[in-house]
Length: 436
Ligand SMILES: Cc1cc2nc3c(=O)[nH]c(=O)nc-3n(C[C@H](O)[C@H](O)[C@H](O)COP(=O)(O)OP(=O)(O)OC[C@H]3O[C@@H](n4cnc5c(N)ncnc54)[C@H](O)[C@@H]3O)c2cc1C
Image 1 (cartoon, rainbow, N blue to C red):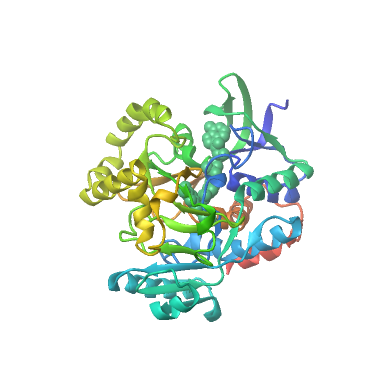
Image 2 (cartoon, protein in one colour):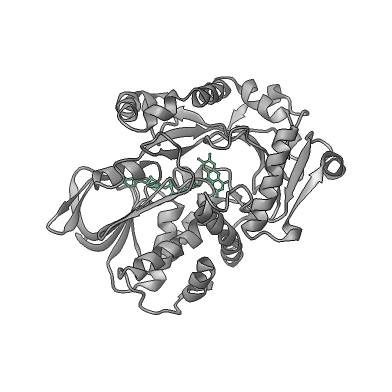
């Protein structure tokens, strides 16, 4: 194997794989590799999410500008690529319901945000509860935001297809390979793989999802930041509930500044239905099971005590919400009750199978505040994407274009052809879109 690279991408989630996809068209001379610790891409969060291609109505156009913009363009890009590759993509829309007057005010704000973020008049609308009853008789609410431009997909299949294209264009993926250490040596990065091999790279892009903060810290970046992991659990609904509603249903979260959304009623792209996710605090980005959380409990606790996370976790409101989430993990009915508030027909006793949990890692700054937008940290030898949470899967393609263009503008990885075709797109057209 080559030991010297121009660029190493750490992480084969949807973001790392999207970067590799575009670079596979744009670059034919530089030696680039994507390193993924698991046996396949999208094994963690990218393949363990709600599978929604989100319209950008939930995102504050100021505070979550990058997420909103990436989601707006991501929708059309996912649609186009899925049609080209015959991948699952269903434009099934979504409903966001309010259960009281206070949440209705928030829905009115979401309507404004959606339009500010680019949604058209006929793509998003407010419905009264009686208007909604005519189309969705089972849903109980005060008011409802109906968003037509929202879709469902399977992000595992989607990411795998990007990897296949990327490999066919000559790009390398090292699967089953974990970056176990990384440090600077003689003006390059010396990267240790699986605790035994070493490779070198001039530049590193860190898109390691739940481990991205740990890798950034090893590379002496983002030392003022830390993260807290939350496991989002799902329950599978039985067949008799598959036609309960036509659209997936979300409800307005009571505390939107905290990373706790209320569980949704989800219609997946294959027509099956699930309830979830909650957001249970755990001690590892891979804390699906108690054994992994026990192993990471002491180191994570020490890290939290010595960082801004200390303030966040001692915050009374945070503790109250976290306890609520832990209860909804321990008791199936406590979780399902959160959905029966707007879908009273659901009977918790009929729901017996768990779905696949996914873990979200939320970044906390040194003031103890959860950071709302994604974070880009870069210097002359590395670029790190931190806090890349929902709707990160929706926005991964346009966001990758943004990152590659940023590197290009700073003189790294100069594109070989400006109007290069990247799958169904011209790169120059994509740049124009994301910069407006
Ligand atoms: C419960 C839940 C529901 C969500 N629902 C949606 C949704 O419906 N729509 C949407 O758009 N977004 C959703 N999201 C957000 C979305 O899934 C993420 O933003 C996105 O998947 C992040 O992609 P990523 O590539 O950055 O991270 P990841 O998918 O986590 O990929 C990072 C990869 O890096 C690898 N890695 C880490 N450390 C190392 C190392 N040391 N060496 C080698 N490899 C390493 C990991 O194995 C992993 O495969 C959801 C998230 C959660 C948690």
